[in-house]
Image (cartoon, rainbow, N blue to C red):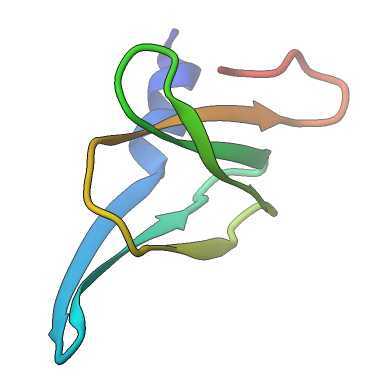
Amino acid sequence: MKFILKIILSVSFMFLVTTEISGQQASLTIENNSQRTMTVKVMKGAGKGKLHKVVTISSYGADTIYFSESGQYFTKTKGVLKGRNPVF
């Protein structure tokens, strides 16, 4: 349980909203501060949601996801380390 919390807390979410002439754009930067490789699914909507994007982030890496539509988004995260059980 502590390790799951460590993975969750080690993922830093930063929403950056900028205003442009054509409208607003947002981005989400995900940082992986663990030895596990993370697969992150960004879902749009409520309940099960609809898949927006899937990114795989290597250990101690980062990736940025950009949004062009407004709405509710959430993530599903899986951390994998060779020889260990995956963490969800």
